[in-house]
Amino acid sequence: MHQEEARVRLLDAAEDLFYARGIQAVGMDEIRAASGVSLKRLYQSFPSKHELVAAYLRHRDERWRAALADHVKEHAGTPEEAPAAVFDWLHTWFTTPGFRGCAFINAFGELSAVSEGVARAARDHKDAVYAYLTGLVRELPVSDPAALAEQLALLIDGAITTATINGAPDTALRARAAAVTLVKAAAAAGTERA
Image 1 (cartoon, rainbow, N blue to C red):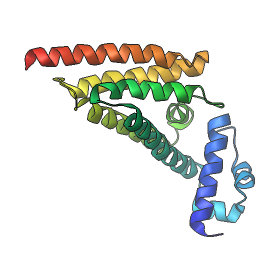
Image 2: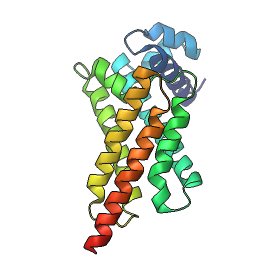
Image 3: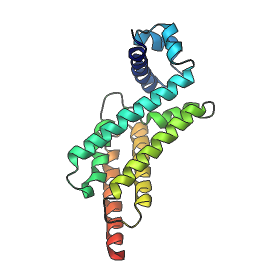
Image 4: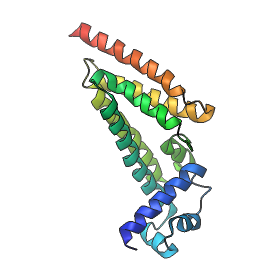
């Protein structure tokens, strides 16, 4: 098995196990067994569990943001529809079997005090989501896209957390309604100032 193949198998196994059960509940031997990669190869690829966790988060970030962007691109016919499409995607994600909330918030809660790499990966993910939202709302006639993007990011994290705790996927739809209201208000204010 090549090093890159082993790395991908380890990251996939880590993602499945860490997301489903939590980081501290899963040992390296369990990841080794689930991936089919030798313990020696595991430690060659990731010398510590914290390095594996940070890599898993970066791997998940790429896939999560790509899936979100693909959905928005496919379902938003106009720039005005893009923010609502974000929350439609969240609703779909919330209804998937095994949904356990935000992997980045979960990991930050478990390990941020002892792992700067995990804390950085979580912050980088949140910053990248904010940057994506800022790009979406820059297409709208709003005077302060950064402020609107921050409000949408807060709605996203609130919806994810609430859906996780309450087991209520429709939280995304309520957050969607709030997002549409925010976007309309920001666009109306931006048009008045223009």
